Image: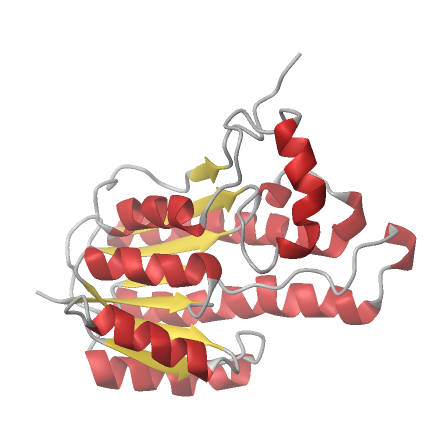
Length: 255
């Protein structure tokens, strides 16, 4: 039976890699991104070359009033949603002093990374729980948060706050949905080389070379996507609300 995965932020980086990984697992893909149709259509062609269906959808995750129409269109096209990968997110408008954080940057991070993702998950969870039982692990929701859900980077405090709140949302949804056999997981990427981290590459190149991570390299989107694939595959039915750090050992406490 064909399963369908909804991937947000699917046009680039971790989302793009997740779409490919889930297609390889046998999922058809509903690929969501904002104002990135050229990349989405490239993704569609490449996923369909793997023998899976991929349909693009344009959505600003922060605009919760538009969630219902997009989800209705996805369900009409595919019949059901079996997996949601909450990957879409934004960083701060500019790194800087916590005392200078603007309301615009704060609201942007919280609206997209936390508020929008929470309500999208709520809508998908309602859909999943309304379906006939499918067995433990057959349906899943994956939250892509960040190492900054746990550790503070003072130069981008609003981002840290948004991801910390999202980490709690993952635990809350896990508790709510576990009785329905729906697996809810959290992935905490560390230093992953994407367009979001590119502006800081030179700085972190030096820190990685000096031993900041136990594995002496940048993480790649595919490193995160492999974990997402495992979570979505239904292989962890007795694992509830667990976060998996994909960070090359960044978060290991050392002396």
